[in-house]
Length: 58
Length: 261
Image (tube, rainbow over all chains, first blue to last red; front, top):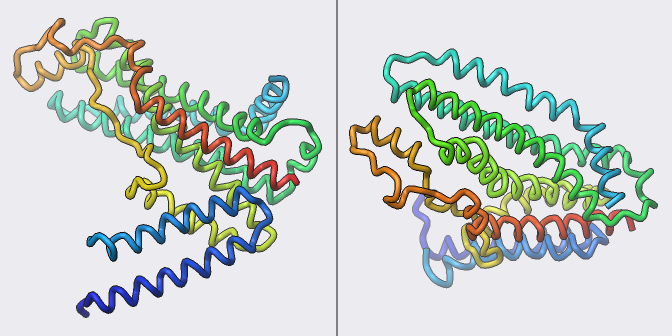
């Protein structure tokens, strides 16, 4: 199957939505503020890795 | 300081079996190295060097598991007795890290001595600077730039995932930290202290030996090969890894205290 740009964009959006849901679960899953910010840091990094090719090319 | 000493003693009591096992494994590596008796000096040296690299990698893995036992201890509530002790969280993390690093340094120095022996067997005549480099500088550099941040990261992983123990989301936390860390190292955006080993200036005894093996005239002293051993502490890598480890220990300490709360 050829990954067309449109299909890639849809996959990126789906991955970002999944990451958003994961971050929501992680944020609600603990009362530790440091764990909150660490989870945000890691999900943010992964989200940036997904968005980056979309904005600046691969 | 008293708290750190107590925690180090506790760490010694609980992890001495691991430590002695790892240091004792140097005997096994020595035996394996002695068993390698290929014809050519180059082949023998390459194979023996490969064994030493594998030994170092296995040492890092064993020490990671040693500090990672914290996860099982938290699950079994073994630290309940320490909860009300007035010891800051970072000292708990630091004690584990320091003990594992001391064990790792002893192990790495043992491997360094083994490398020295390998060079002697290959017919190299090493001067004092080369011997110090093999036995002390290389092991210390490996411990500071590779082992120290790795073990600190393992402790952060354990404490970060333990923060999600009650909500049973530890597995998601493990995935996020295991994917997020390499991604952050690739993209440099969030952590600019990614690891680059510098071009190491090797002492003339070692380079001269390799030159001789390759059939190249030796560069000799005064031609830029000489390394002042105490100078290595000024390498940016070492400073960067110390800062990164300090940051990770601080975050892990905060997680410890918040879990106590």
